[in-house]
Image: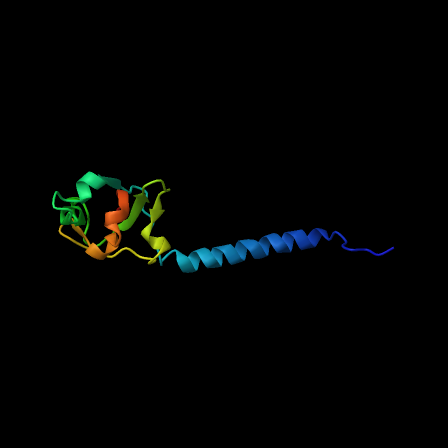
Amino acid sequence: MIKIAEFQPGYIFWLFIGVLASSSCINGQNSDRFKEYKQLTKRVYHFTKVEFITEEGEFNEAICTLNIPDLKEDSPPYIAIYYKRENSEWFTESLYRKRVRFSFQDGIVKLDRTNFWDWFELKEIKVVIIY
C-alpha cells in the first residue's frame, strides 16, 4: 500500500505561522504605497444623441467640459466613458484605446475631443467620474 500523505500536526502550525509572516510582510510593504478613500463621490453624466449633436449636425463640444467644484487638485478623478449604438449593448472606450484622455484644474474636467471618435454613430453617452 502506498501512502500519499501523512498528517503531521506540527506542519499545520508552521504553515499557519508562514502565512501570517508573509501576509504581514506584504501588507507592511504596500501600506505606504496607497491611500484608501472610504468616502468617494460618483457622478454620472448622461447625454443622448439630441444633446451631443448640435442642430448643425456637429459634435457639441459643451459635453467635453464638466464643472465639478468639489474636485481636488491633488486627487485625480477616475473617469470612464460608456457608449451605446443603436441596437447594441453599452461598451467603453477602454476596450479600444485603454485610456480616457482628460485634464482637470480648479473644479473643471476637460475631456479631450478624441474620446468621442465615432460620436455620429452613437445613440447615448455616459461619463462616469469617481473622485
